Image (cartoon, rainbow, N blue to C red; front, side, top):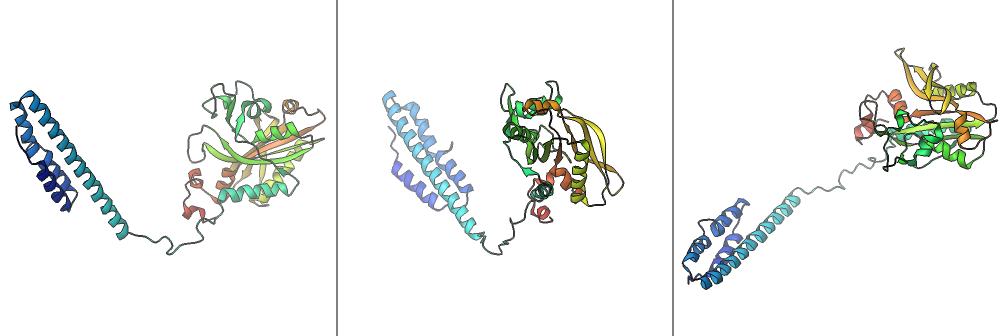
Length: 330
């Protein structure tokens, strides 16, 4: 049976591995000790001339030495790479405490500022702020708000549902907060509900699947469309300036009747829609158990829409990219 000094082979390999200077050396060593022209390869060719018993025993010996060589090369390679990256890290060390700009991260996001300003305007005339869950039921988001089964807003292409029977969803409007408030509070009601809402919208210059709304609700005796008009004109002038012109044009919303959109006359003379509103549909009040002697009005405004108009922002994605160069402007 062939006699090969395997201890000498291993000792030779260890010396070769200690002298490695570059990563490509490991490939050369692997070929030298395990390749088709290696000593082990030559020894395997001798197996065919051995007896069955010797072939089995010597074959196992060659397998063991092959595994040992593979393990030595692999461990040495890993150690080499670890040392390389340690040295690289030391050579490229960056002290994060140097030139630290403490004002980074202290800027209030423009959407937060606009939201707080809108809330403050309505709070100044007696409205309370209410909040509610973002994960909602179809009852609070659609049924209680007089939205019929056939309405496109209920389609899965428009709404992000959370279960297969379409009874739970991510709210598409903060009107859900109005329903929850009326379910547990008697009139009169004067509230605003700010928060995030979700829709299956494709991201473009003016649309995002996640955005912010503020919706308002007033329920009392003897409220009329004139009260609604006066409230929203006050808001628009407080937010955009006293010289701004507004007009109301007819529209349709399932939860208000009559309904309208509010437009403002912009600098170039163009009329731009900024919010929707209307008198609360009697069916909505019935759904929460309010007496017929009460009526009211509601409205909803997009916070991103307001910010884009005021600051002339051309793409909604700017709000969400966390670019400090953009955020520090406000």
